[in-house]
Structure formats: structure tokens, C-alpha cells
Length: 571
Image 1 (spheres, rainbow, N blue to C red):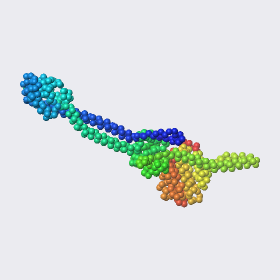
Image 2 (image 1 turned 120 degrees about the horizontal axis):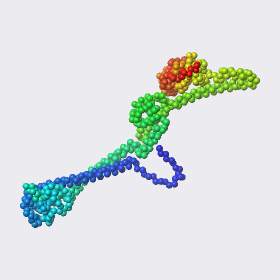
Image 3 (image 1 turned 90 degrees about the vertical axis):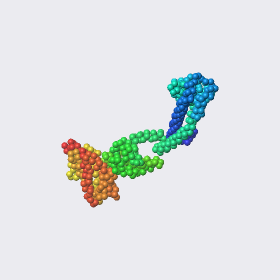
């Protein structure tokens, strides 16, 4: 995309004249008009040449017919047959052949009608002074018995002439008849046909110009007034942007057909060759279809509100906006961002934050113990100080407020739930392990365990804090079954509102709003927990929805392939 830099006023030395830029549509119109002119000119020339050839052929046919008609005249045949020589010019001028030829010439508007004897001597001619002389063009073809039509130039100028032999009844050739029409007659006939030819050419030119103008307007409408170089730049920018951005981009036409889809969008939405397909037939999530049907805002109105959706194994942040250029509706653009990794990191960060809170809570205990040792030493009670340190080393420096913590031997689960217990204690909630807790093996899939167990425990703590029961507690039971881990989480809250149970595991359900009382999942908490559990064949469900005044709800989860039984901590 070109960027123009504004130059400050003082740096301008001389204003350059702005060159008038001819638009692509105008160039195309001019080029099409030029092509039409060439085509019309070529067609007119070819038509004129064909017309000239046709007229020449017609004149030739006419001259041949006249010549054949004269050659069969009995008077002409008998006169040439009985002649013993060439008569004098005066005799020829008044002779029957000259009279016949001139009479026919006057009726047919021929340029000349010439009759010769077997030696090529003229017996008739429009110019009486050349009678009795040899013809100016060769009569050999006709005297040899052929009938020909050719274009030649004689004493009367260029003409289209036909030469026919004169035969007796016995077939002897006693002379020939030559009938010619001037080429000027052909040109005159052609000139008379020029106006319709020119009229057809002008009409074709006007139609071509109108058609080119219409096509130009259609071209401008389809290209939105963009020039070819601008379209080329847009295509280049589109390829760079679509395949260079981290987000998935899905472009839809006003009719809902997919026009643009980069590889990231295909991967995130699970699409295969979507170009030209209506978005409703792509198998998209119903929530995403709802967003496309009712987009929030347009590109001209600024950033649109993004919505989180679950799509397969991914958590997506989706925004849909309408796109306009002037008065043209160009369709919609769907922006898709993958938030799965961010959500996973967020859960891990929550776990780290929980452990940090536990360490902060225990800092006071370390300080108190150090003050005690310092007091013993300042008073000179070194033996008591040593005994106190020995007892501290035996009991351990950290003591989580997690009841029945001795039931857990996996260090990760113990540290994680211990940190959660410290966090819960700060909110006045007691976190305890159920007496039936038995976990054999070590946790191998910390991500799934953190996400599912952490969500259930956090929701239970929130429910206990918001509940009406003054005795606030959360009880967790963990039971291993080979590589699977079964989890139950109960709390002392007021249970799940009846109106919220149907939407409990939907995206966006939250228990943080006491007004709506929607579910127990915080945003995508329960939806994400169930999704992760189901990836490996597990699940998350509600065992008991609870009662308004307690006890609270009981959630259960089954996590497959999260334990390594070969590393039993009891061995």
C-alpha cells in the first residue's frame, strides 16, 4: 500500500503542474473506438472491393450476352461469309454490319461493339474512321473458337469486354464480335452504392461506441472505479495481508458466498476449499452463524466487539463486521483469533499465582520462626534454639491449610491443591480432601489436570463465598483408575439456579453475576473444562445441583490418560 508523506510548506520550492490522468475506462473506450474504426474501415474496403468485383462480373456477363446475341445474327453471318475481301471504308460505314452494331450499341449503352472478319479487320466501330483497320487488341482467342471476357485498354480506353466468334451453320469461324463497357460505368455503379456502405459503416461505428461506453460503465461499476494498477496493488496487498497475519480472515460477499479465506481461517474453522460456498453450508458453529447473521458494526465504525467461541479443540475470539465502499455493500469480513494457547497460559499463570499467594501467606510463618530462633540465641538458650530448629526441619517449613493433605502423595497435586487451600483460606473457605481419596501414580498431563480441577475448585470456592451458609467449605475427592483420574468437587454454597442449569456448560456462562445466576462456569471455565476432558474420552458433569440453602452443588469429572501408573509413589 502506497504511503504519501506530507512535505512542510517551507520546503516546497516550486509547485509542479498536476498531470491529467486518463482513466483506464477512458483508455479502453478510446482503444475500442480505434479498433472499431479499423474493423469498420477494413470491412468497408472489403465490401467495396467485393462490390467492384461483382459489378465487373455483371458487366462482363452483360457484354457476353450482347456479343453472343449479335454473333448469331443471320445478316452478319451471311455478310462475313460472302465477303471476298475487305470493302472500302465508305462501304463499311453504310454497310449492314455497322448499322446493326450501332443500333445495338445505342440500345445497350455499350462503349463499343466491334465486328471483325477472320483477319481481325474492323467491319464496325463507334469511330467510322478506323473501319477497315486491324483491331487494337488481339482477336486470336475468339478467332480460335473461345468466348472470353477480359478487361483491356483499347482506343476508347479501359473497358470490360467480351469476345465471341462468329460461326457459320457448318461451324466455320468467319469473324468475331467484341462488346465492351467502360470501367467508368463500373465505378459509377460502385459510387452509387457508396452511401449505403458508408451508412452501414457509420451505424456500426455508433453501435460500437455505444457498446464500448456501456462496457466501460459496467467495468467501472464492477471494479468500483479502481484502476488496473490499483487492482493489482490490492491483489498483492491481499496476498501479503491474508497469509501474513496471525488471524484467520474469512470474506463473504453480500449474498453470503465465501470470497476470501486464508489458510489460518481454514485451519481454525476446519474448512476445506470453501471459496464460492455459502457460509451456511460450511458446518460452522451455530454461535458463529448467529454472529455472521447479525454482525456488530462495520469497518468504518471502528473495531467491533469480539466474542469467544469454542470450535473443536480451540477457543476462538471472533468478530464480524460489514464492509462498505461508498454506497456499495461489499459483504462481511470475519476475523478469527486463536485464544487456546492464551487460555492455557492463563490457567498456568493462575496456578503460579496461586502458589505465589501461598508462599506470601507462609512468609509470615518463616518470619515468626526466625524471630523465635533469634530470641533464643539472644537470651543464650542455644540448646533450645537447636531443638526448635530440629523440630522445624522434621515437620517441614510449609504447612498448607488443606485438610487431609496426607491422603495425597503426588507432589504436583499436593502443591496445587495446597496453594488453592491457602487461597481459599484467605477468603474464609476451608478446603479439604475427602476421606475416600486414593491416587496411585504420578500426574503426567499437568495442563488438563490444572485446567479441569482448577476450574471446578475455583468455581466451588466462589460458590461457597457467595452462599448463605456461614460454614464455608469445599470438599474434593480424587480417585485413580489406572491412567484415569476421577474427581468430585462439592461446596457449601446455595447450588445452581434452576434457570441456569440448561446453560451451565455453554460458552460464556458465568457464576460471577449474582443478578443473573447463570451457571457456575466463569466465562469459558466449565465449557473449556468439559471440552478438554472430552478430547481424551473423559467428561465433566453435575452430580447434584444443590439446594438454595445448602448443601451446594456437586460436580464430577473423569480425566483419561493423566496418570502414569508405572510411577506409583507408594513403591
